[in-house]
Amino acid sequence: MFRGTSSVNLDDKGRFAIPTRYRDELQDCCERQMIVTVAVDERCVGESGCLWLYPLPEWEKLEQTISKLPTLNKMAGKLRRFLIGNASECEMDGHGRLLLPDNLRKFANLDKKIVLVGLLNKFEIWNEDAWKAKENQWLDGDDNEGLEELGPLSF
Image (cartoon, rainbow, N blue to C red; front, side, top):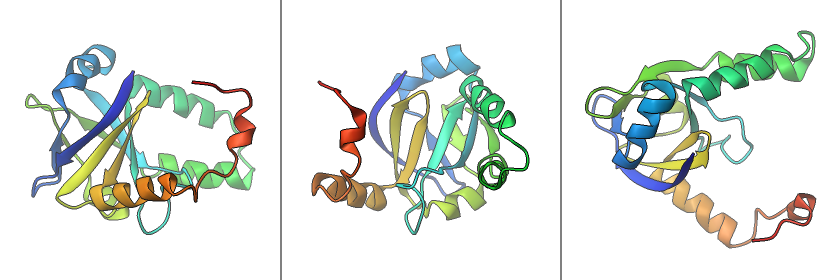
């Protein structure tokens, strides 16, 4: 399970180092095989997009779910084209680095400073400035619509 937020640097080749606290788990769960794709969450779409990074077994579960969606459903088709069509395999190298494809870096407006956010079974990858802006937006309460739909959630 992945949790927490890590600020990391993207090098000139488009690589970043996975924080050491996740490396052993990624070795164990997916032998360093991962999939990166565009995020389809409404929070991540727009001028400050983000990416989703899945360990391969988690990605395969998602693919199975998507493959069962009706073929002629418009939304299912869009989801397949956008999420699956932009997916790229990546392997963590011996130094714990991942190479992000150029088209995905451009989609998420990633530059030197990025943020890796653990979301239990996957990560989000954000441009650091976009992440800070989203955090401020959430803290300001502009994005709390739908909280009542979570029901009796308590902490």
